[in-house]
Amino acid sequence: MTGYTEKIREAAKRLLTEKKVDCFIGFRKGSVPMVNYPVIVSDPAKADELIWDANCAMNLANYVIGRKDKVGILATGCVARNLVTLVQENQIKREQLYIIGLPCSGMIDKSQVIDKYGDVEIVSVIDKGDTFAVEAGDKTDVLKKADFLSRNCKICAHHNPIEYDEIIGDKVADPETYIKPEDVKKSESMSDAERWEFFEKTFSPCIRCYACRNACPMCYCPTCFVDESRPQWVGKSSDETDTLTFHFLRALHLAGRCTDCGACERACPIDIPVRYLTSRLNADAKEIYGFESGLDPKMRPLLDHYKLDDLNDFFK
Ligand code: SF4
Ligand code: SF4
Ligand code: SF4
Image (tube, rainbow, N blue to C red; front, side):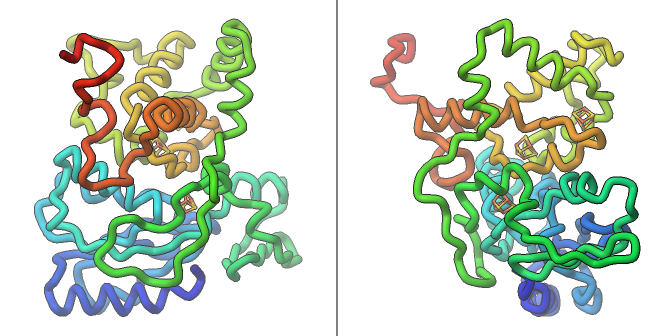
């Protein structure tokens, strides 16, 4: 992954110069360590701003929604699945996208790195492939990336993009079998009361900033149900009932659509494990229907297709 930057710049420059795309969506270096910023480049001369490393963790699919022009975009395994889902849901046309696929070995979990250094200021974090160098205070450590991967990347089943127009780099090995998230396993062994207590404890500190919703490419409703005032579906305070209602309803709206990209969890300023509920729904979709979102451009999304021989006879 560390060698992708030059190839990405060359591809963006070529596509913009040959007018195969009107703009190119990628990342540029952020002003703080471990947070690279999404950027939309339309001038080939600015393609040299583009970079790639294990701190390019926000989901670029978020930036194609509703565009009318032709867009070049970088896509890891999860981002490609989000793009496929957005095409299926008519948020962008496939022919408007020129997808540069990037096999991906995972993103650094900045919260874990910050926790390790406590009050010591982290000056820079440089991706070196299997390791990364952290300059913190007056010393530099080289840490193993595998020990600091984001929670979703640790269990990622689809590292390679399934949909692309060209691909950069060699494919990465995917796990041979499905890995059920630990949180999901834990919740399955809880009683209803224990599970409720866990939900309350996990989600009630939420400050309703909606960064998780805004970071999610599948949360694209022009007016989210939490912002509606006529009717007002949910209160706007940080009252626990309102907060839990937001999280439950948002998770249900993601059923059969979430790709476990982790953007919601990374965006949370107080490290709430936001994927907890969507991971459970993803596990149900996989176990009950054998379905994972965005893997097959020809297949309709889980909740809008059916079979006449469905076990429930109301389909007939
Ligand atoms: S979930 Fe993580 S490892 Fe998998 S493709 Fe996305 S960013 Fe890469
Ligand atoms: S809910 Fe979170 S993990 Fe799922 S697609 Fe949205 S941002 Fe990604
Ligand atoms: S980003 Fe975190 S604090 Fe903000 S609404 Fe989402 S869960 Fe709550």
